[in-house]
Image 1 (cartoon, chains in turn orange, purple):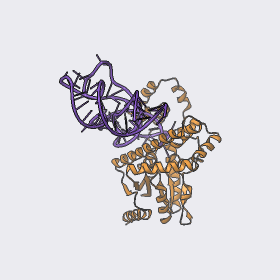
Image 2: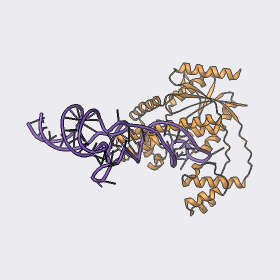
Image 3: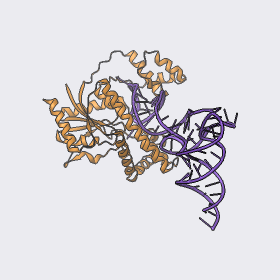
Image 4: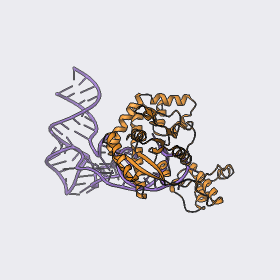
Length: 306
RNA sequence: ACGGGUGUAGCUCAAUUGGUAGAGUAGUGGUCUCCAAAACCAUUGGUUGUGGGUUCGAUUCCUACCACCCGUG
């Protein structure tokens, strides 16, 4: 049985600090499960907080942060693959892997052991699909069998990719799943929704006054198109709208703040869903201090090791 | 102080000639195995500022008061 400790929680709940301190105490390394911290140069908006990885004078090694250029379309498949590479590496050196992050699907992909086939781009297929209407694409996707999920048909990009995957899996049945099954011991930091909202708002005010706007401007100056940046949502979307003059500061702040609140809510929905599926999450009250949180984690950890 | 205006869901606003209130948004719940900080679905909120009057019936008409806004002093 493989082993892994996971620290999850909604945004602005202090996951990184807990994970870093824990890792430093148990000779561990952090593997990030954050869909945006993978991008270089996107630091403040994603809450990378690299300085937090130093605890008690020593720096805890981390993985899957700053691994691709902004503008690149990273995805859950690549995350899953890279996670296992990092995981193997950490374990091979006798260190304890600690997954830390908030992206629901990324976390679930590892914890629930999603089975992904490596499906290459099929230019020929894509060319053929180009002329079809959305409805025809949906019909085609359904012809491969029952839909994997309904979100596949919500937009054309996913629709095409879903067909590409279905087509590939039809031709390459029963691919061996060479990735090891990982059993994760999961901890979640939990606050009242209202408290999370307050923390998010305070953090946003701080970030906007401490370099977030400059960071987005640098990304734009570095050659990223506004629309690419908009795609990353939240901070990058709304600050871009501010910089390009499409939105006044107050409106930007209000809408962005709300969007992050909604994001925190969606994260909680993900975790609830995972729990309903049978994933055990040990919830820790976010209001207790860090030492006490560590004590809770170590206590449960000891219980599982004995 | 005088003149005018506005008070309806947390917020912004609707409601034909009076028939006991609807939208958007926020909030809440959910969907989810290749862009997931995405995309989509569902849904809870109201003594219509307060008191009185007219009326079978008032958010709508009348009246007093309260609050806020604009103008003039």
